[in-house]
Image (tube, rainbow, N blue to C red):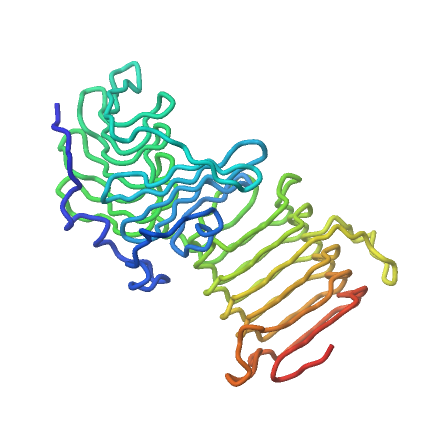
Length: 399
């Protein structure tokens, strides 16, 4: 039987020496979060977070706040509580465990992290040594296979390797992976080793797969991770259960392409704080319940309170929206997109929305608010029934 490890492997192998993602400044990655109180909203604002989008649902999020602080967030869904866990990998402790209620309230979960117990996890002899919650492994501990060999040391959330840990080869007892996990899958940042201890891969992971793929295509049950640079949504995607599209977690995204007749039931779109985003293309009849036959210029179309937010994307150059997309949205806010050169609306877009193009956080003395804006093209019926249109900047100002 292998001997339990009561320490982390040496820092030469450790998470602290992994490559910092290119999008994340080194100084920011090293800043400690000891006194930070995390909420779901604050986790959403962290640049170093990882999740999978599959079956039109988002998986739990694994976030890295700094070299020591790892966060697990499972969103509240319908009547099921969410879960927010903040852990310190060096201290081998969960700093906080909270349920996320439907009203947004956080309710603390108390459990004993100090008492180590032995729990059989299968009828074949696999076992867990560590703290337990509700009869399942929960906290920092050791996982052994049926032969008594150590195969994992690290955090577990209801029996699944999560947050941070180390995987071992049951035969050679050597480290085969060290880094972050989410629901028994390698996720976040980690190092993979061969049996001789040589590094095979040092980088980002999502859903047990190296996050090296840069183009993701969404269609039906195909999964994409949030580290991709180009996102393609194929025609007719988005069922009745999909009511909101929030792309704020796709921190490396450079180009977004949405096909025809997608997300017809979505009534809120948020594309915010994507520092790498350069181009957005939305094809006809997406984000609307209207069909081609229902449009008749001069007639008021159905309103459903849809909201579109495009903010804080400094590298965005092109926003192209084809016929009838967003036709029944009431709100269109485009702010702080200083690189924007072209806005094109094919026609019948945002028929009941007021239009605001502003850059409120840029001091006047610093120059033009939208210095790159060259072209505005609005087809027939775009913003047809709006009550207010504002184009505000140092280059032009009218309402």
